[in-house]
Length: 167
Image (cartoon, rainbow, N blue to C red; front, side, top):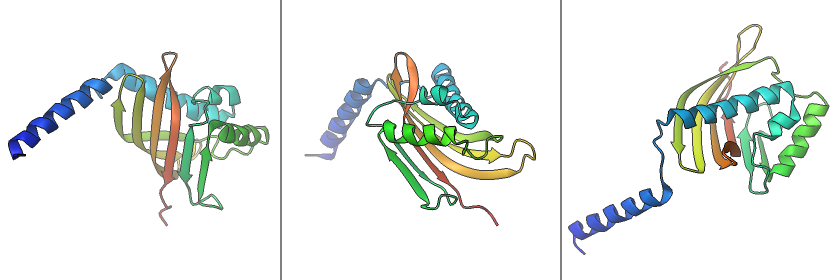
């Protein structure tokens, strides 16, 4: 095949893929707002240890995944395959009042969205601050893959990598 034919075929394939996935404009302000409100709701419910509200932010299915790195974990990396494993862990954590940084607040920046009709991904950098002293507690790079269920976005994948503390 000639170069021109390759380009024509590649262009046609790209057109088909774009049409098949019905990519929404990443600048769709209403969808971006709905996604960021979900992330804020999940974070708030987590720090308040409000289990039912927290749980409602997620896809409660076996295909759910959470993978995260933090120097503060004894094992450094924690992962949960299937929502039940995370649900059981968090239910116990909340009941035992073991949630750290409960009075903290977050600032997200360098946000990036890719939004489709029923699936989206959202990446961002996050700075966490002590709610009283406003001291920086940690910085992370995060990813969420979301699905739309019943018209509402839900978290299907939660990934985070806390950056090493600056000393």
